[in-house]
Length: 396
Length: 87
Picture (cartoon, chains in turn red, purple):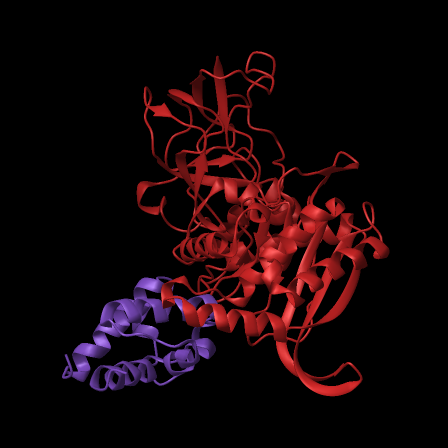
């Protein structure tokens, strides 16, 4: 059976990507989870993995072209039974808006594109404009109507707007983080528009967790040490598997609980922006394994090379400001997820323990929940389970 | 090995730093400044840096000593001192 291998959406903010490299050629064997292509998005280079075992039948999209989400990249002859409707039942979307990039610029940032090549059929009189492009045009003081009437075909994207602006104005210093900022803005605007958030906060005595961590780290070589963040990830994973209504997606007007717990971990990029790839099955892995995988994930984020599965999998997200952040953080849910847990910095504060005033390291934990799925009562219970686990780190 | 040219040592430490943080332009590093202030170094970066130094120079680094690796120059001085008098 032949299966269409399509460009997946790697986040609510993604509209297209540049196909930078094929990792397989027709006739090659491919396994489920194996990378077939590399694409470039605002988040960096990402390996796109196959969901099937089989053989590569044809490469449909050409390396160096820009492809929209959902477009067919390749066709795979699969040995396994197909669950989704076959290509015969669902007409495959062609790639009308594919943009051929000149070779030299193919590896440059997403903001650089060449003029669109002609596509079959008559060019529409007015070109559609993507929401992000419309916003960018507004920022740059260009009327959207002017854009719609420009020559060419296919939808107008952010880069077209910037190209037009660059032609009109003297060249400004390039901003490589711009695409990232727009991507974050798009996803967070959608979240704030669609998700009725509620917020809860709880201060957690972090002394036990710190003491346990210091003891653990003093017994193992430097390369096997843990960081505080991994304790939090593990605690959230266990709590999410215990209290199910925070783990999953809100789609098609209803909550779909997820069977596995994949923790999206917000990782800040130097110079601005962040990505939130997932640590898979975090509830079923011990701290040592989670730490190794988290370490590997951060390393690949820093070098700009991630896997598509990591971007589509997260069922709940954890975000922490690190050691020089604010005391409390009120996070925004990453749609279609329904909850996010935030951690401020651990600071020493006066705290009452058994009627005595003591100085303790406190961690302010917050949760943002989706009111379409849960309410503050359930959220409090969820937060309490996380806090209890951190207070009893040997249970992690 | 107890004697090493400071220049040689600092270039080795810089190489390690570039390997664990490939998103930092090596030429842009101010050796006297804190890496956290300069490049948003977080706890994972600090751990990676300590691990790389420990492996490269064969020295054990206590978790409490991470603060001494917070800048490029400080890290070189720490390694130098460790190599001179291994505990």
